Length: 267
Image 1 (cartoon, helix red, strand yellow):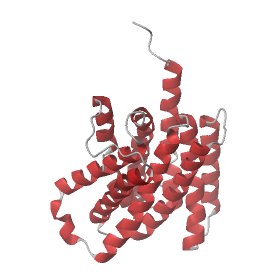
Image 2 (cartoon, helix red, strand yellow):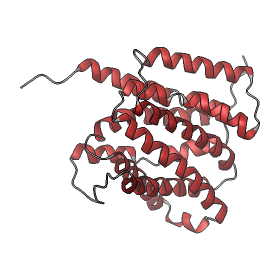
Image 3 (cartoon, rainbow, N blue to C red):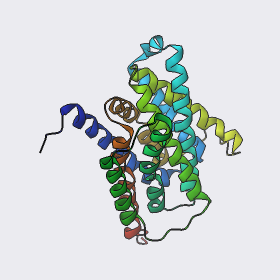
Image 4 (cartoon, rainbow, N blue to C red):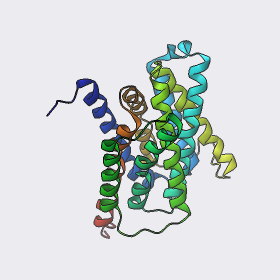
C-alpha cells in the first residue's frame, strides 16, 4: 500500500479536528438558541472570533488588498447566511435530523465543484461520497419528516458547499489569515443585520445566563476557520467534504446521548 504523503494527511487531520469541534457545536447551539435569538447567536459567535484573530495579529489589516477583501466578503456572506439559516432551523428540528441534513454538504460540494470548476468526479471520490452519505443516513436517521426547519438547514448545506468550493479556489492565493478575518467579520455583520430583517432584535448587550455566554465563547473559536482555510490549499473540495461528514456524526452522537439520558430526576 502506498503511504499517504505528509502533505495530504496533515491537512486531513486539521479538517478532522474542525469536524469534531463543529460536531460538538450542534449540542451547544441547541442548548443556547433557546435563550439567544439565532441571528444574535451567530453574530456574536463570529464577532468574537474576529476579535480574537485581530487581537492575535492586529497588523493583518495592513496586509489586505482589494481582492482579499472582496473574496472574504463573498465567503463570509455564504458562511454567515448559512449559519443563520441552520440555527433558525435547529429551533424546530432535532439534533439528529439537523446533523443528517447538514451532512448533505458532502453531496452538494462535489456537484457544485463539477458545475463551477468543471472538475470531473473520479470513481474513488464518487464512492467516498456515496459511502459517507449512506453511513451518515444509517447512523443518524430514525424517522424523517420534512418541515420548514429541515428545508432551512438544507439551504444552509448548499451555501456551505458553495463556500467550500470557493474556499478551495481562493485560499490557494495565500493571505489565509487576512482572508479568514474578513470572512468572519462579514459573517458577523450579516448575522447581526439579519436581526432587523427577522425582527428578533434583542439589543447589542442584553443580559444572558452564564451557560449561554459560555456557549457563545466556545462557538467563537476562530482557529477552526484558519485550519479549514489552510487545509483547503492542499485538499480538494470532495476530500474535505467527506472528512467533514464526521461533524454531523459527532453532533448526532451527542444528541442521541442527551436524549437517552432524558431529564434529570426531581430533587
